Image: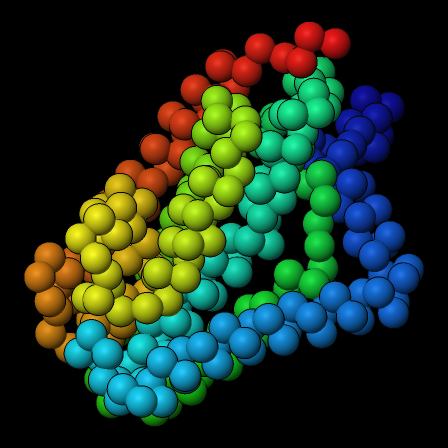
Length: 275
């Protein structure tokens, strides 16, 4: 009897699975709307890819990189961002919850607030965005001269693991700041989405302040530019050298520590809506 009851008892992830299933089922029900959302997300990704092509229409080399080389930077950084956006993109709605006071409901539930926010709304159309990045990655890997040794394969694997983790940390950092700033969603979004845009471009052309911010504080240069330099065996410029790409695990831990500290501070700082 005890074994039977234990087997039937739902696991700790059961509530999240139920929520995710209900969110997905609700979107699948309205197929026309879902199709339009999927198509719109795909077009948006293609437009962003077209921006890279337009930059090289009149300048064949930017920041020491050709179009094919920059396409690898774009693919790695954008794929990492899209992967993190699928799970953590909902965190950019936190300012709305804080201003409305509805975030208090999340505090009353036994589940972690961060996980509740992540599963509060899952958008299927976000899954089409990585398709453009994967296409760009395939093109870049086949149109660049690459030495397919263990180091190259290891670097690509490391980037595809650490890159999304770094972007996830950036999402959490921005969300944690919202508990304190409240009405500064545009400010924090500039770091999330502005950082994503900067990371898809050669870091060698970044201004000094951008290099410090997205190179070291929020290490987004490690999600695309530095791994691409290493894979393509290209020389770096200034502080950005290809060998530094192997510091990916270190800067990923740094991003996670910063995210954890910011999130915990935000949770402690919030005092409720007073309702």
